[in-house]
Image: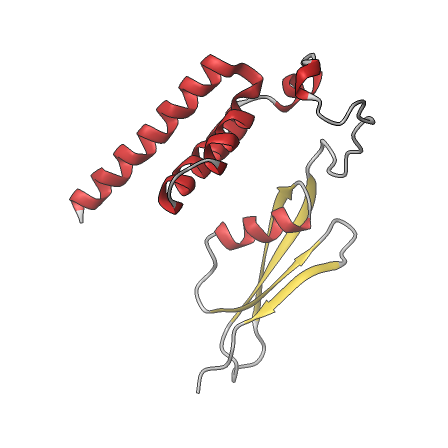
Length: 159
């Protein structure tokens, strides 16, 4: 088990080192270069590794710098491009995760609530999945700032 953990740590360090090298060499174009290498990989495993490098580069490079950088005309293949329309807001939104705890045959269930910040509903779902759930959680709901339910899930009843 320890050998596997050390191997994972070395793999993560290697991915971060490659991402750092790409950022220092390509600057704001590092993510595009990593994606190109991911597409051109010879095997599925290599493509997965480059995909991990892409995500590290995306987290490390500032988004504003990439948007404000001057675009080289040779990169534009289809002539003039319209200004992009942004869907996600810059400010994270507030969501509430409600955990329903108890057992299916016991009334009333206990309700535990946690506040999170996320870019949108899908990011809130991912954050809920990565959050430590209270013991005996049988369901969860995610509510937006206005109290509207954006996601709900209940565990299947055991037989």
